[in-house]
Image 1 (tube, rainbow, N blue to C red):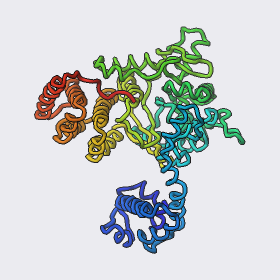
Image 2: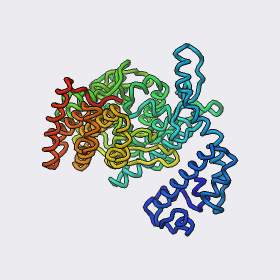
Image 3: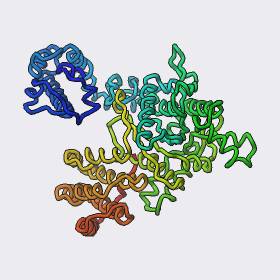
Image 4: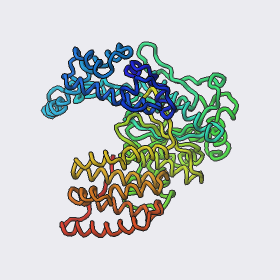
Length: 546
């Protein structure tokens, strides 16, 4: 932002519309030595200038006294350097020494193993603007569950909720009534509760914080007149770690659900109350009143107490599935246990099916750019498993939105298909990533295998991959001469696993390959099996596991 300001640019405007035409000052073209015609061109120039600034500082050992010289060499006398100078000074005096202290990771690990003191420090993601957690290598602490969601998380999460509602109305002409969201514990530790804030905002409730401690004392329903829209009926699938780490938050969500269900409001403005009354009068009418009321209010589900995971990865790795029915059975059996203020893991698989069967929109959020949806099996298990279950139980493919809060000030909501395509283009078939991962030898081959496995698994559950994606992966991973030679040399098991998985995608109808590609993969599979036999080895398991 300081660099953009020094050049007379509005960084927010550039980020909002990267493809828009830009009436750029002549000075920008001189700095870039090329025409600057769009906001995207200006953003690219800002990246280049920032890199140049840090390269010059690195050549001067990040000496704060060299900042004026570095700015003059890079920008000349253009603009106000005040904010930029402050940023570079912080980088020299704080960030650089803290990053140089990464050697503390080994030193403190050895100290901990020897029973000696390890300094404490906060957890978080430096790439998300949390530079205060540096240096790494400390005995990190997480977050007070009673302070979740924080006021900052409320700002981000309520913004995400607005983005979701606006996008759904733009695509369908109406706001969503029933939504399901997958929530993890680790991400909410990093964000202090973005997901929880989004859930509360969709319901139409806001946290109530203690003025001094900033702990959450409860929730208040936002009046419909102030809310300006109908409430949303939200079903939450929590991870096992979230269940263990945030019992207070489960109670908080349940309080919001109960308040909404018992609010004296028109049913067309309160889908939670409408569904609650419909369940009491229909699906649960034959049960004792207390049991029926409890089951009609279940909205938070997870794995049974003491258990973890969603079970989908084992199903895919063993090939023991034929369609959405198998994914649904596993997803519900593993995650159909209800949690509330009064219940802790009650078997409620029938209620979970009912909730999923009426879902219109499935959500998941990612809070940083240190990983993506195709380098962890958790996305295909929790997010993909939920999508497949809703599709099977409702008979309709739900809308699938992926929230990106890697920049908390500019939270974005994308369709899952858009996000998959973004990751495919930016990493999966990016020659720079492939070249870099090959430097890691055997582990590089394993990472390639995992990427193919996770693309396959996410497509099997969420139906997001196009034929050209599989074709691109086949050409870049299995059939590219350079990469194939790398795998033959460094990890022949990975070569066989990648080839096998791609052929499985074709066999299951997920991919209709070009005839020559299919022929080449079939031949490669035979060759890879022969290569392993020559080495006296059997195939090792592919990628799996986050």
